[in-house]
Image 1 (cartoon, one colour):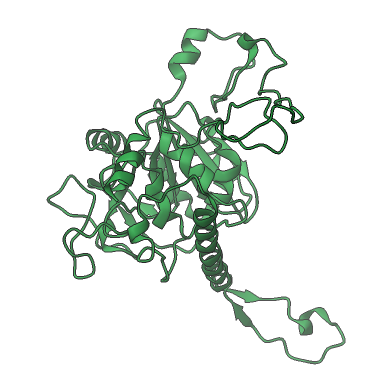
Image 2: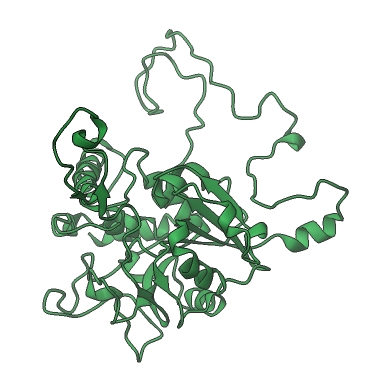
Length: 377
């Protein structure tokens, strides 16, 4: 086990990528990539596919982009470079939580942070009276989650300019949170993935490891009856929830690839997020206590409302009295989330089993970490 863990930690001493490109070219057809495989030299040769940008002169290839808004007129390049922000705050928001979102954004200095809002309710114009709105990015797609948005609009090559990425829910109280201080602690603690600790008065606390310890600056593990001393399985160590995660650039590159296109609620990611920690999750994943938040637990993806489209209402010849039926789409959201959790777990198990070149550094804890309780929204 130790040898696997050592190799796992060592693999992140390069550029943080655990996937290496295959540069072998002109292999014989039906041969393997194994240079020691038997080959007669008579096989048909298969030319390599062109590398990206091969049709262009090297100096014209721009492999990444940024989210910096540009002037329509002549710019001073020095001012453009000076204005490039280093950090990103991205949230899926609805107009009903405008005040809460405004309070959150006020904690993120605009000279250092790009603000990106994903409007799941389609309302954009009503945000324009906020001072920071016109300096922010607004993206609209109706009834989508932050994970759906993140997969499509936060590709690592798009957010490459940012050293740290905050991917937050909208229902968070930030009276005791300051973004710049938070990042100072994250860097000092050597964390690649983190979250602010949760105020004990939060509406929901799924795992005790996320609760604030008033006497600590940050913590990476917890000791309870279910998490005895020395237990290395998630969520006893190496765990953050998906309501307010913060990622380093390298960690986000890994997490983005883990997000499944069709699993939009993100359930299950929290139990596997430590694989993207750029080292041992027990050292690189943690909860920051000195800067903490309150989880308000406001349902945003649906809520109880009266069904006003009953057959009796739509049929002018009907003599039935229309009854007001309460329909709660939040129940349907949670049902779909639970099904997505099962699908995510099955895909992980299959992928781990079918990849002969991947060794699980946490295999000893795999069964204990198959999360079977309530998921995360």
